[in-house]
Length: 87
Image (cartoon, rainbow, N blue to C red; front, side):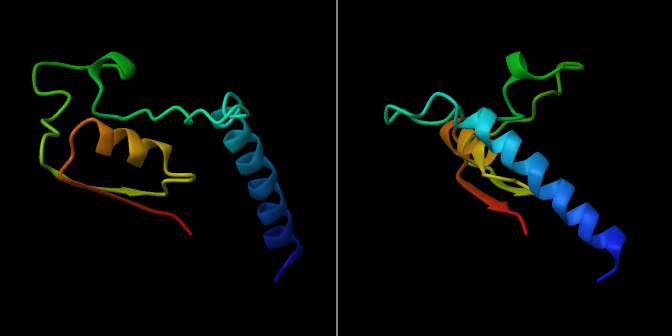
């Protein structure tokens, strides 16, 4: 592994830890973390009548899901199956 790869890994770990800390900031007392979904028209810049696509009973995979909050939010929004994948 090169020095550039090591530095990239170090920065990625640092940033991802900070990102996850933001999501879990309000869970100290046993609450659930926030669960956003890209299928929520209020939480995304909707661009027309076709957006967001229907989610009910859809099978959805989120690639690069991090801690999976978006996957959980999509499942709670009514997806038939929601799978999150991240290395």
